[in-house]
Image (cartoon, rainbow, N blue to C red; front, side):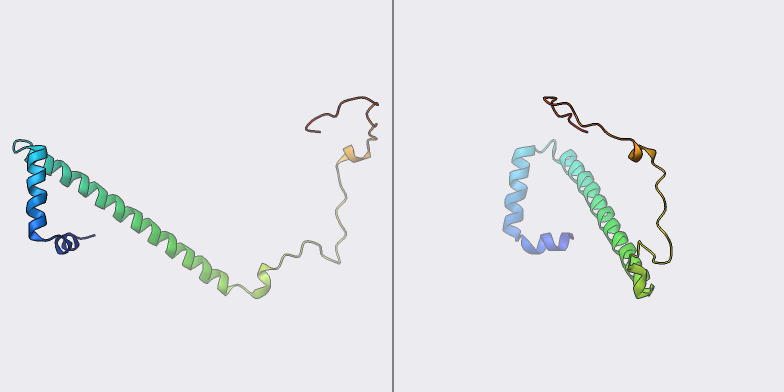
Length: 114
């Protein structure tokens, strides 16, 4: 937001009323330091807003590059083919599947998490 937008939306009469209210609330002795403090905070806000805007534009640029790279890939690059027909499935090396499990005794409460 530029100051031109602020100046265009507020008329001269409103500026005088605003300055009079600020002068009454802040006081003539503290007005210069209050204006300086306001300017410092306004500057920090503008820098933060510009930094945020730049980060969003960088993210958009990175996303656009990723989409363009994905468009260059062949169409079958996104197909998931987990089982190949000419290769046998790998044998399981987990020996715990061959251990027999006894059923719980009658009246035993179920074990949670098992």
